Length: 145
Image (cartoon, rainbow, N blue to C red; front, side):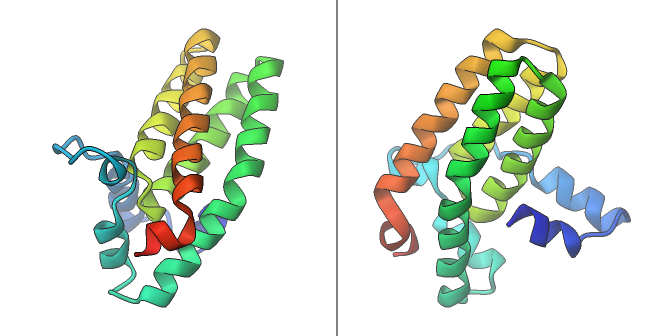
């Protein structure tokens, strides 16, 4: 998903604005599902198109296990540059898919990798797995409705 979106983004001012927009918002969020997933924001991003929303969620949920597995391997190898790249990709994809808590965890993992803090990176990977579990348990139907 992130690769597809990246193909449409240039290095110009709009891309810089998009990068800034990928940072998780710190606004107060309701408890429960809404703090993990922002359906309204995703629906707004896709112009209210429910079919596109479902497609994005499906692709996102399908791609996540492989991304997490790659992150696990990178953490085990102690490769901060690879962790940083993978976390950055997940951060963007999560933000685009409305997975707010996962986006925040990926941002924190990216920051830990930038400072070569492998202990924090390992802890953030656990958080990412937990957030993925929450989203997976809701599934496409739960997230799209």
